[in-house]
Image 1: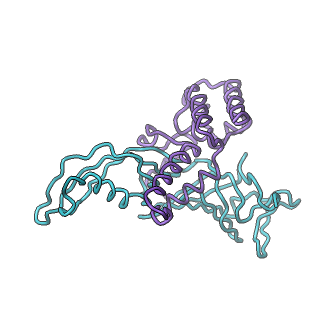
Image 2 (image 1 turned 45 degrees about the vertical axis):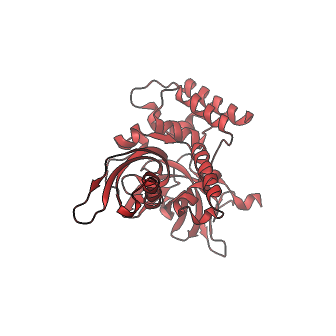
Image 3 (image 1 turned 120 degrees about the vertical axis):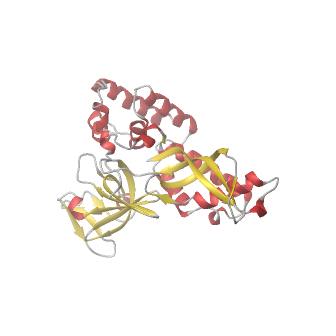
Length: 177
Length: 138
């Protein structure tokens, strides 16, 4: 889910940037430093939408750098366990398939794909029901439920399932073509 | 696994910080990111160099999965949903997934029926109906 939240960060600025444009410099550096990053707590920072407040700077002993506390608003993407969302399938193999929902990758293991769907190899590997009516392949859109998340320093990775009511393929690119 | 072990969106356990925060539906994010992208375009000729991969992927994603395109419709959806004493998170899940039946809505957002709120089936049904009307007349 996307959220609009207020975050705070201490920004260190080199003294050469001091002057009438200090605020602009600080905001530009903030965008460069923060946008596109990911933390386990807040998720992916997609875009900064505004800067609320820049506090008093504090000169660091010995270096001359100044630290400013900056409060800013941003759009973040944070997946949660138990959340249901839509995603695009990016890769299919016999272990299951990978899907992407915005910046986050979700793996759905073949144990969490309904039992009536069988893996079919070939140049377009896919999972298909025995009657061929439902097919999951690259670029399919699926609705899935996140059942687990793994967080490391720069990425969040999710495990999902489509083995539940109202989950599974939403549209099938092969059928439309 | 994540740090907060008892995290579960189905029971609305998403941490205080996010529970109080403003959630955004995909269509709203699409409006925000689109405007931002236009700003970048004005500043430089090649905005694709300026934006992060996270931004690019998010923009593609929300464009693909936005149920409502026009800003007025987006505002109406939020207004209709906010009449029903939903948590921000529930509101956005419904706005994103647009369930068609009460049963589907409850499967998507099980927390609607808990937390001591009285959401009758008819009320949910009416809410879903109102939503599909906006979609129809967009």
